[in-house]
Image (cartoon, rainbow, N blue to C red):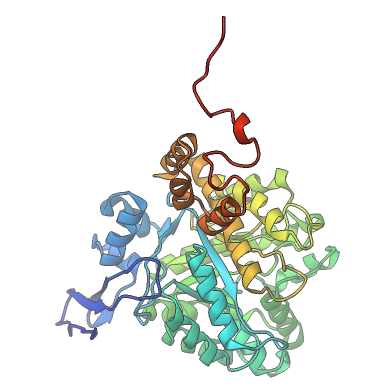
Length: 463
């Protein structure tokens, strides 16, 4: 199907492109890509919302979230919801991020120096999509990163994220001494032109905060954050991504890239959770949220990390307040440091608590976290665990439709409707496989209770 773009006249007009469906999706999607123009320049979703325009992306997300387009438009206008959708990303499945919407899940893929198969990372992206991920993020640090990025973007319709500093680090082989602020800006520009929908930019780590990390058990565990910290110390200068933040906003506004303000000082152990370094960065990110919105740029804020259960809610609420209710994008949080091989479970526990407190976007953690690059099975388990956490949060918040889905599933279970249970399960594939491996597969009941099933037959009391 051909793409057609209407050339806009002067002033503000509506312009549409017809986007072909991505046949690899579970469902088929036809999209009308909307672009509004002012004096020949395309507007971002937040700029359109502020002009009371409901874009087709907004209409799609509103329908998916079971809210009115007008309500969604107003939430986007004040920055509480974002729709990451780069003007150059053609075959995108629109997704909204915000505390009043369903919690979404991101899956990370990407090459490493010892595992640089692009084909495998594409397969991981497709596995994540089939498991129900809402977004894909490329963390590649080896091989032809630009080519890897373009191939993954073309392989899935999910919103696509990146970490520009990783490409910069790969180009200079980790030698921060060779990198200039101009190089950082140019890589960000190139990634935006490729169609990246949301970018992690490590803008919140400043020279003032560096001494605060010296008292930590784990120091700086963020790859990008560590790189920027070393750069600042060597050059004796402020973080260039903080110093040139308005230049980043100019690029983001041109392409409608959602800036994901990275948590370079996130705690890497429970002992470091809630320290002055972490909170100082949150305060800086809050000021950058305001600047991004003033520049007409959509923005989300990243968070920890390793945080004990009793501190998660207070941290989420603090972030929401300081960051002006911008959508929060959290890794975990992992509620224990000792779950090696099972970190997806530790992250799901923390993710559920964070989701109930208002987190919008969970970055999956796989069983391979801290140990090795995840394989296909790890990717699937990580996505499912994060989806369970997000859904638990949606139930607690009474997000539209969440409790209804549980009621439907329980009706199927009560009626021994196995196919109905599979259809409505978070992981239909595994549920079906377990059932089919049962010795009672051909019976109404499962092999746990067999004929002693509590729901089998009417409840009778003999007198």
